[in-house]
Image 1 (tube, rainbow, N blue to C red):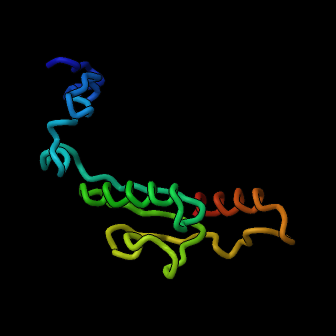
Image 2: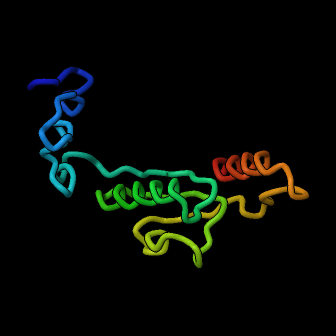
Length: 127
């Protein structure tokens, strides 16, 4: 099979591209991903410091939705998630949103924002 090697027995790392702009190996997957039984479901943990309504958060949520749609168990860990101000997919139950380290302040005396953000991320990662 073209593109297959000992590290890539199914030819999935082939760099050829189809007219749709997708790699040839993924163009045949269809909208639902690989055929059932081709890959085993994974447990995926995603960490994001503050799950609000920004562009980075949209990318994180879209990745979690797609992974869970493909049958993977996804846990999204964050230090802040406000159910009144978030993307609806985070409330739908498609994947779990787990808040850790929210007790640590976002700033100390109106300063040290970067240091507090780093500590909050560390608390999320260590939980």
